[in-house]
Image (cartoon, rainbow, N blue to C red; front, side, top):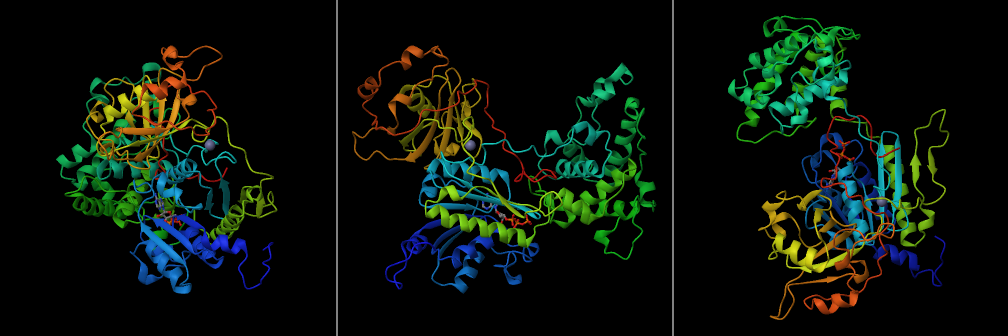
Length: 613
Ligand SMILES: Nc1ncnc2c1ncn2[C@@H]1O[C@H](COP(=O)(O)OP(=O)(O)OP(=O)(O)O)[C@@H](O)[C@H]1O
Ligand SMILES: [Zn+2]
């Protein structure tokens, strides 16, 4: 510590500031447990922690705040109890909840001096990033993948945000490879996971498992002409499975015999490839073959590749179990730790691999691919959490410049250093859709009473000068108001609250007909007196208009937006306008429709980690 107190018994101001600062930790898993312990031993006394999950046996090897007797209990709650058991001076509040929930809006985030992320998925990281930007609270973002890791400070206007640079696309595979011409084990595993979802999970048309007659290769030289009946009016896999009451034999024959025969009829596909060999239920039950280089049978069953007859039995028994689990439910959630689901995927992936002469994999290997697991390394988590809390101390001393991004790398011939840092803070990307400065308006409105249509007309159009607004509820990516006719009509008569706009929500509003974007922070407000206005807002009046592009007035309502700001004050006396010191917004928005910003679904079958470049 650099500062010395005059009286050694008096705490220094830094110690004081640590003990008084209010910290939020998001996630109480591998990194979260380490961060909580580090915060606690560094003198932090006012901590809140949130995690949606419960403790799994597989967490115990590295999430040391948890013991065997805690399995099944809330991670956040048990983490709190464990920390208090070794330091009762710490004040910790635990939430067993998702950070996406409405209660944790901008106003919730504003209560903290600093937020530390210890999450495991991109969607939640994006959300906290946006919340911290909106609340203008520094965020320390950290993540590990095996032996690698990263700690990054995110401070509005000073550093890059989590979304400033496009993240590498998660690896996905062309649908026709999965459906028609698999050539690697992973293709069969993806197919089997899709089959699980088609039969028992949330049906997704993009996860069709049947032969794809639209495959460009199929149509080449017209060698195979797609029959009209071919793909067009096919029943959904789920509907068909229900009709045959999930009979394992019928299911098996469809997926592993009939569909394969159908694929064989697409002759083009097999001109340069080894054609698949269909297998019937009866043959499969007695087929003792397997495709594996590994002759080791002393290993546990999960580590071995089994025979086709074994996988066929597993297929039948898991279909029966999953069918029962599905009864009365809309769908089952895929979970790598759910034994029947994992066994089903292992069996289907290996039967398909056998048909296509692809090497088969043990259940253990398939689990690590299907569950997108990169083994968590306790020491990597500890190093990263140590760096995160070191940066927390620096941030609270306003030593932002001393917090360039830290990288933990696996030692190799190429990287001699384990921990490296950037030379300086990475500046925000001026074109970032998330953090580039856009005008911010604080709107105060009764979310329980105001209808969406009223909000659109009275607030967005009549007050904020929008013409054709598209409003997206930030974090959720939900379009609540659309300029496309009819698209969100269903919302018109709902209250703001009913469509998820509550106190602390952030709306991104983009005018389709003008170069005009706004960020709206929603605040709950109830008119008390009869004369109170139905809503109020705080904004910089100069920003409430379309931006000009290259000196040309943009959009059909340029004239309307040229009204002097003064006029706005007098024009609308229901409204209180104060001035804020927001910057002008940077990059001009393209008028392409971006109604559904793509939120990545981290649960898909992906091998690469998203956190590290
Ligand atoms: N939206 C969210 N709200 C709150 N907590 C979340 C949210 N999304 C993820 N988390 C939590 O972040 C933590 C991340 O920790 P970690 O990466 O160690 O994952 P894990 O599930 O404990 O371990 P593993 O994935 O390796 O089995 C998890 O405890 C998870 O529940
Ligand atoms: Zn950004």
